[in-house]
Amino acid sequence: QVVESGGGNVEPGGSLRLSCEISGSTGGITVVGWYRPGPDRRELVADITNEGRTNYADSAKGRFTISRDGAKNTVYLQMNDLAPEDTAVYYCNVKDHNSSPTWKSGFWGQGTQVTVSS
Image 1 (cartoon, rainbow, N blue to C red):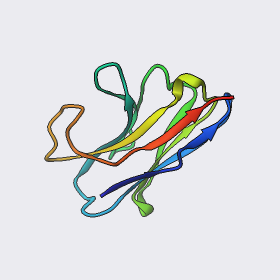
Image 2: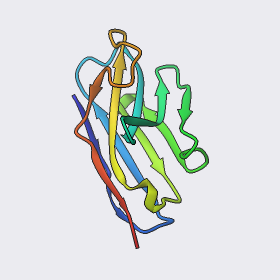
Image 3: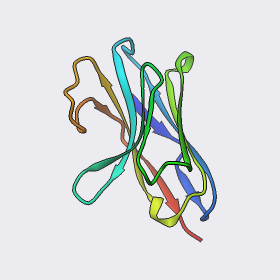
Image 4: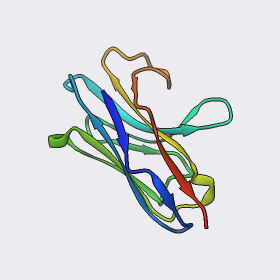
């Protein structure tokens, strides 16, 4: 099970920290990512592998930080200097050894809404 939290309303320049809590069998997880809707598919914002390697979309570099707490089976997305164009539903995706190498594979949460406006 994948459950996101931490979304909300924030003014431009503000910060939010999203959480993705993962329950169930977690031993085979290979990568956890945060996505948001794009023109024709959900687009990757940031992901982190089970080895701790991180990857960011260009729009997220320098502003967002993905991290994990293994003891809590939780992955975080710290978002700073938020802008109106960051407004979206943010989804957490968990891939394991059985997941195909496509963006939509794996397990998805229901999403958490982030709204940036003044």
